[in-house]
Image (cartoon, rainbow, N blue to C red):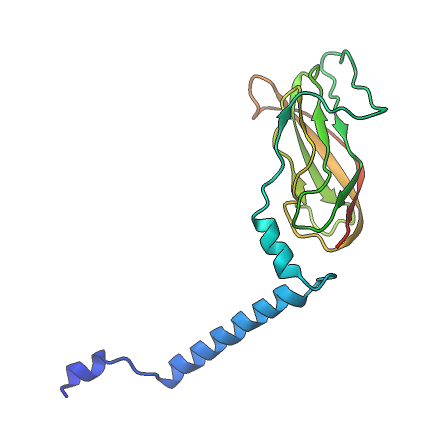
Length: 183
């Protein structure tokens, strides 16, 4: 064989074998982590896959019918009013939970909600809602980030945007809620 033909032949050099072995080991470690780490039910990978194919919540027009809760008939000009479920429960971190948010029809603003863990572990929200126009609600949605099973104290912010330009911030409010992830 000529020298040219010998160079074009593929060989398993020690460097290539080592790289392949490291890649295989890394892949095995990731798969193992998905199936075992932080998995109270031993099935984290399956929950992740179900969650990947579960759509987020759907914003609907109208008003929530919640027994014992009445929305205000009139809201003074410039005041931000909304309804939020302050005891949010998820079966697991990958599926939709009972996030319940409503922007009353009488409100003068487009509203967006964000939830944060109150322990200060991160300044990134664990949930950001779609923007809700007056007269719209959301009755369930998915978290934006993984949260291990447990009960968490959280803070939330409500950002109000002008009706005519939903990129112009008109004000903010905040409060507290409890989030529970069962498993």
